Length: 311
Length: 143
Image (cartoon, rainbow over all chains, first blue to last red):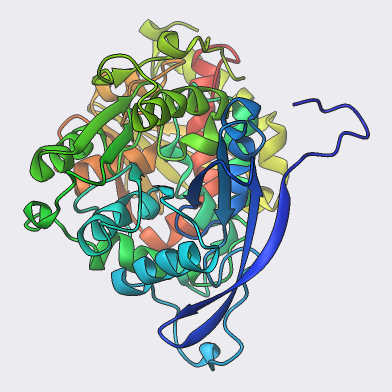
């Protein structure tokens, strides 16, 4: 997309009201693509917001065919807390039921027909609950950085009055990205992380590292009708490609693991050109436009992206 | 600098110059970073004495006359991986390395020791200093 002065990007932003268990949530979302395109519903990572998807929303190759929709969860980005709750009297803490119900509520409120759901990190893990609890609601589920269990990141220092949590919430994630991803986009990813409200990152991590545990429940998932893709980056130290393969093996039919070479835990924002290339291969598999099976590992050469030093 | 000089006096001197001339250490409050920490490469421990975001001194084999808040320990191979221009996964950043050891139980990664509160209070500046090991080792290369 051109960056010449005067260029107006075709991405639009709107609000939709979503009912989740009787509470009204005013949800902000951005979208681009044809009205009759296949909906591709995009979930941000813990403590962040939909700006992580700005490069996908602006990718003509994908938005020609897909209606890309990226939303902010309640308490994130421009989706303010619900006006009906005294939310300031308790710590924000996300659990699996609330998270999954909110995603389905957004799909329902936007009246999306057979959407593809895609999310990274906590948005990747929740594909397991969505596949288990709402298998009829989606055409396919893409779990980026998906694991059955991802312990150890519900850290008290991420919400502590003696710590600069704005900075720490971001830079505790610095090492989740590959050093070969461009420095500009890695820095932008951290900048987005610095915009989260107090306690929200840690509250999301309650779901991510405490509440979510599918190690003994993968066989509950039937992915034969709604395929599940566990797509994990080589440099993701939390949920590495072996974790993605364990998810696919545990589910069986309909579950596919793909390793993404030379990228980390925030693929869509840390290296958009490489990720969008990888994603195109997966989307083509979902739509049936790809000849042959996906490889076990996607590499930069496969999608004609040349890695370059980022200093 | 070459990899064979990892941990030598000349290697540390070049690193000190790199840190003390780094513009990022001057912004967003990082010039407030005042916690001493050590780096242990194999059996060799080096204390980095920090004064307002700059390295005041690098002391080999610190003893009871010295004080520090935290440290990073690892074998020589782990540090050699860490300072590569494109390091292999999981030895490419300290929180990544520590997580792989502490939570995943993997061997061969760098580990944090000491006061966790002080680490998180100074995480960005401390992390930047560790990234600058890579920059100094590669004469300005990738972070």
